Length: 182
Image 1 (spheres, helix red, strand yellow):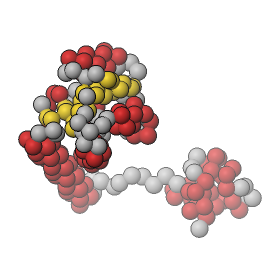
Image 2 (cartoon, rainbow, N blue to C red):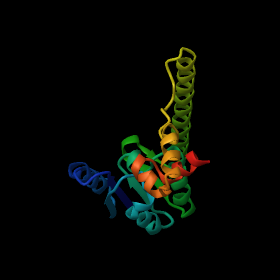
Image 3 (tube, helix red, strand yellow):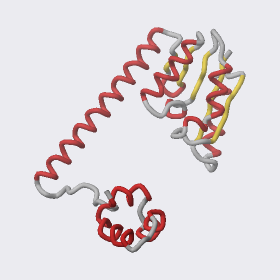
């Protein structure tokens, strides 16, 4: 059975959702799982969970685009493992990838490797840029917020104010108040 999954991040993306549903129907999907929820909170993606529970051996889960399914390469591999453990396959329409074929599996793994490589290069460049800026005295990092209020926190505490009241008065967290008092 061909099972489709469509998702948009916000409720105002109805045109995008309708286009996904249309493409999934054209691909032959007999059952669709559709939701409008951010990919960041994986626990909120109830329809994805239902789709993964629904698929059986020999089924194919179809998505129009990779970003509609997974939020990262690690998440993609986690989902792919779940799909393959059920004896099902994954098909990504816009990339022409079908993991029921050896070539599709290879392409997905290559893409995942390239994405991880690009991410690590980007982080390395970012670290180098920060180190260079620090050496030139241009990068100071984030300005400390709570510790800059330490004297005021200590003064209010010595006047008998409770940590919760100090936190509200100064505009920092209760935990920060305790750190200032140590």
